[in-house]
Length: 227
Image (cartoon, rainbow, N blue to C red; front, side):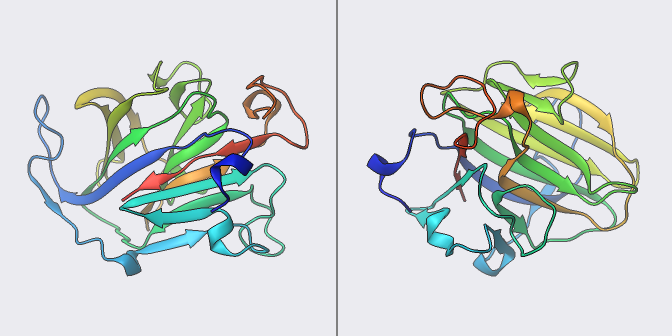
C-alpha cells in the first residue's frame, strides 16, 4: 500500500463481511434463520490491475482489507474490456436457496462513481444486483429512483443483501431496515463480489484536487474493505 502521504486523498471504505445461507422473516434481524458460511482465506480471490503487484492496490492488516483504484489503471487481466478495479470475489458459489451477504461499511466523503458490492450471475448481463456509490448515495446500479441510502458518507452502516434464487428476488437492508426489494436478472450460478470498481462516467469520477466531479485522466477512486 502506498504511504498515506502519497495518496491524493485519504479516501477509504471498510467492510466486514459474512456470507450466510438460509431464510429470514420480515420484520426481524435479517440474519435470523441463516447459517454462517466459514470464510477461510482461500475463499477470497483478489482482482487488481494486472500490471501491478497486489500491494499497490490492496492491503490486509489488522483484519482490515483496504482497496483503492485509479481510473487510469489497467483491467484485472490483459485484454479485458472491463473497468479498473480492486475487488474481492468470494469463492462461495450457489445455484439454489436463499443466501445473504452481510457487512459493516464506512464510506468517507469523496468516494463516488464506484460499484462497491455485487451479486454476480444473470441472464443477458453479468450481475443480478449492483450497489453503487454516487455523491454520498448508495443506489441500485445507477438508478436515481432507487436510492438505498441517501447519506452514507462518514458513518458506519450495516449492509445486508438477501438473494432468494428460487423466487428471483433480492432484498437490501441498511442498519437492519429494509430499503430495497427488487427482482433478479435470472442466471444460474451466483456469487458475491465487493471492492471498488471504477464505473467510468463523467459524473462519477473524482478530482483529487478538491473533490469536484469531473472527467480528467487524473481522477481517482480510492476505497478499502475489512473482513
